[in-house]
Amino acid sequence: MSIGNEMYELARELFPIDRSLTGDGVRQTLAILKRELPHLTLHEVPSGTQVFDWTVPQEWAVRQAYIEDEKGNRVVDYKQLNLHVMGYSTPVDRWVELDELKQYIYVQQGQPEAVPYVTSYYTRRYGFCMSERQRDSLKPGKYHMVIDSELFDGSLTYGELILPGTGEKEILISTYVCHPSMANNELSGPVLAVALAKTLAKQSHRKYTYRFIWIPETIGSITYLSQHLADMKKRTVAGFVLSCVGDDRTYSYIPTRKGDTLADRVARNVLSFHYPEYKKYTFLDRGSDERQYNAPGVDLPVCVVCRSKYGEYPEYHTSLDDLSVISPEGLQGAYDVYMSMLNALEHNGFYRIKCLCEPQLGKRGLYPSVSKKGAYDAVKSLVNFIAYADGEKDLIDISNIIGVPISQLIPVIAKLTEADLLECIDA
Image (cartoon, rainbow, N blue to C red):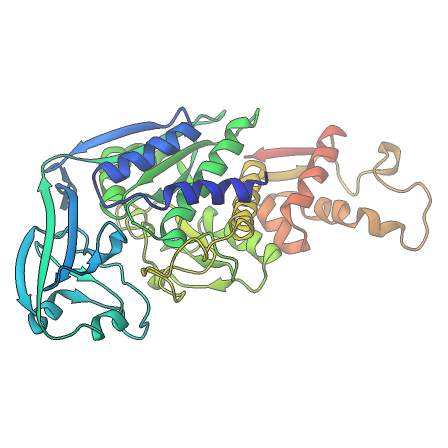
């Protein structure tokens, strides 16, 4: 089975789980991820914990929720689709007329068949979500609104996996586990993180330490940073937020706030070769946990590389973002891009040729022994790499200048190093 298929099957398994910021849905999700990654550690942060300017919220649990008409017919039922209830809704058990009922119904304007994803995490209220077509089909009369829910002191749960490298510098991979019943926006990131972690764990040599975290969005990154910021500021050289990486429509890039970090440079380099038509956004278009990692005073070099950007594709934050939106091919494409970026970072450094003028490549078996038209083409990448290996440009710079993907320059570096012609003076 391909890695793309493995990711898709894991997403299929996770899709029915009812997730929110906190609670058993998150724990159930992380338990399945731990099955895939046995060294994943789970952490609980108690409700009420102060995390910078925020407070870890209470847990939210729903036993049942529905709207029924006077004949007992259920108009919506939480057990059929968990998006039918606004996230963190407080309990309610009331009979109301249709006009009043509509005050508590949220729809997605312009998408008559879509049930929207709506939450009210930090203000106490209740509500239901349904398609615009369904709401408009409701007939006058009385309706029974029932939400059997509970808000209580518990904890926020997150998962963490550290893969040590030979050095102390780190690469951060962050994704979130807090949305119900959405495939691209929610599940594509966590399953891609699992696939990347599995691949990296098998590698015999890692220059960088990799810090993977599976957290609830926003409050999770704030909580994690409140616990680890000092250490992360010392160690993090690049980071990426994994979100919306499962469709196959395009690739997108949202830069860091500074725009010129190592993460930005490697993202632009790899995307320019893999999918030159990728969509470039600005930091003003941010919307996920990159907001927290780039906040003033935090200033971690974390950007976003995704497929269709969150908020931009039509199914986003609705019931239409189902398993048909993602595909093994879309997930595989994101995996390939991320592994290309991580491999590029592992091999990046400032390389310098160890002799003056052009090295004599022929005697080392690195250049054709017969000079004729076309012979140079076979070694063009090698000699162009040599021309710019001055110790002042790193591998990303050289790749950009000579127009050759880093993946093709890695074997060039290996050949020149084996021939004792190349040194890395600053990794």
